[in-house]
Amino acid sequence: MGKPAVGILMGSDSDLPVMQEAAAMLQEFGVEYEMTIASAHRTPKKVHEYSQSAERRGLKVIIAGAGWAAHLAGVVASHTTLPVIGVPIDSSPLKGIDALLSVVQMPGGVPVATMSLGKAGAKNAGVFAAQIIAVGDVKVANRLKVFKVEMERDVEEKAKRLVAISAAVAPPREMVAAEGPPAKKKSRRRRWKKKSGGSAPAQGPAL
Ligand code: C2R
View 1 (cartoon, protein in one colour):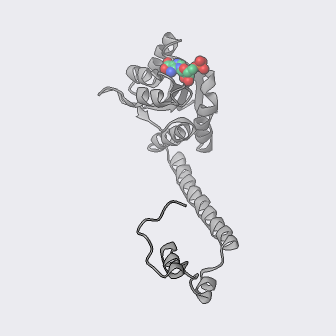
View 2 (tube, protein in one colour):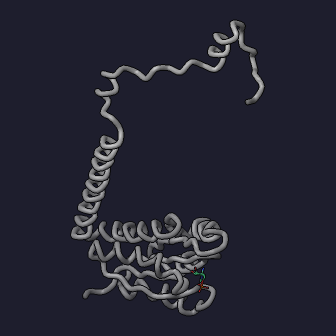
View 3 (cartoon, helix red, strand yellow):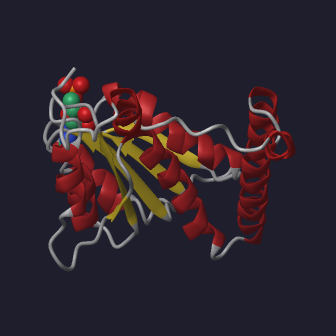
């Protein structure tokens, strides 16, 4: 095992089911990572030390995920010049809107690359971190290319399956054309006219 290139931080152990998605992607791309819990609110000294020593320890990117008033990523970014990727987590009664705004609304000069909310965001954080590493690592770059091809293939297979399912439930177009279009239903207004021999009222009573 080599030195970790990516540090994954999360504000609480309750964030782990979401942040695991980032770790899974890094594993897929063969990027070494380390993972720990640190909170700008609850363990401010640890966050300070972690972010200040990160570059020296060989980290290239930091991913920080947190919910509620998610200040973690911003505070990490204030202590380092490494790229920081923020994952807002939808764990609060506000369904993550609080976390999203806390992560994305950084003042000028202290960027945090903000991902989407929740698991998709954590997954994207893993892919994005790998993309940053790939700028100087051809092996990771190649794995990312394979990932894109596989994703495309997956969607195409799903599209083919969908065509097969729809063909099984709906008659083919040629059959519909041979039988001709379905007979049009007479409008209520016309039917009424025929029966009564008069003209239908413009607006009948609600039946
Ligand atoms: P608990 O489940 O431990 O009560 O935490 C965590 O990321 C978590 O989603 C609830 C939520 O609090 C968040 N938290 C932060 C920070 N530290 C913890 N937003 C921080 O420093 O920003």
